[in-house]
Amino acid sequence: MFRFGDRGARMNWVHVQNLVRAHELAAEALTAAKGFVASGQAYYINDGESVNLFEWMAPLFEKLGYSQPWIQVPTSCVYLTAVLMEYLHLALRPLCSVPPLLTRSEVHSVAVTHTFQIRKARAQLGYAPDKFHFADAVEHFVRARPPPRRARARGLLRLLLALLLLGLLAALLLRGRRPAA
Image (tube, rainbow, N blue to C red; front, side, top):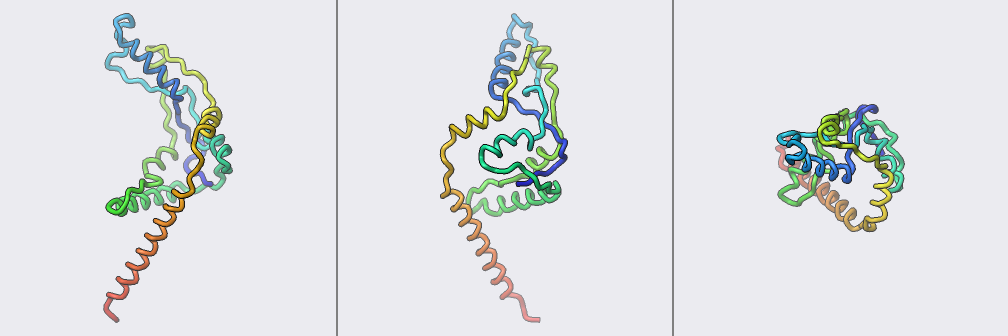
């Protein structure tokens, strides 16, 4: 496994129960009883703390049997890989629907700090996020998910091998068309 970006990069997350509660509070704040305080307003909603993505996801890596990311890869290399994946996605789109495994937007999202203050939601809506542990959500996910399907991975591997063979064949055909020097 690998990691990339600023090791100190932070981001915010929101547990679904906190998000639902924020929506309920915003709906209440649209009433006359609350003075229509939320009318026309936008609020940032999160769990009230910032975390490093790779540290935050450590319980998920552990529960799925992976070691935590330990190789630091330059962000520029990961970004270039994302560009290549996006172009591959565009090239394959007429043949099959394979979503890009990584995009430039996702690389940028992980590599830099982006946090938001919830002071306005606290003050105007009375929003007070409950504390949740990601490890609990991971435990629920592991119990609830179906067993992994090996056939899907084999199908993807076959597709990649077929593309490689097509690429080699195209290169050989193009090479054969070049005039002799």
